[in-house]
Length: 202
DNA sequence: TTCACGATTAGCT
DNA sequence: GCTAATCGTGAAG
Image (cartoon, rainbow, N blue to C red):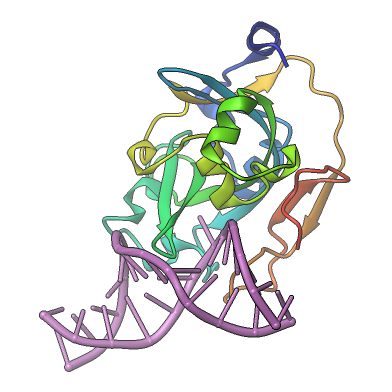
């Protein structure tokens, strides 16, 4: 997709878009665009899979431990990035939901590359298929050059932003249990665009 | 200070 | 399907 086309056909939503219940935001982020203006490239990809991590009654959520140095961001203002390191080697990107002071965030689990594919391939050396560039939470942070320096960043200010299409075509949302957790497995909090080629497999 | 563990991935069987 | 890689976090001592 052309950069110019993407920029003119999308817009950065208001803070209120993010200040809503976590499950609602997880569903509404599907079909939106994650855009990263790096010094050299413009990287953009469509969000096709998310997971909600609730502030209460969710043992799998980091915020369940309460306010700690790490979870501070989750309790903060909506529309900010919560980035953490998992297994000592991969980064995961979350979007903070709910009003300021109320915990809740949405894990971005898979993207469909739109712009800057060549740069994404450099960030993901050895990957052949386009669909494999960002079809997992650790893969997409690598492809989109997102690191711990983005933790706490305002997604309305850039260089990392979320953009909505002016005319979003209707999408069919599929809901399933979350992937890769041991606690609160019974909750149906994973959402994906049905029949999309770029969702994480499992 | 110590320690068990995890919102994953890639590679091998 | 199974597992090594690899280290920050948070709870316990």
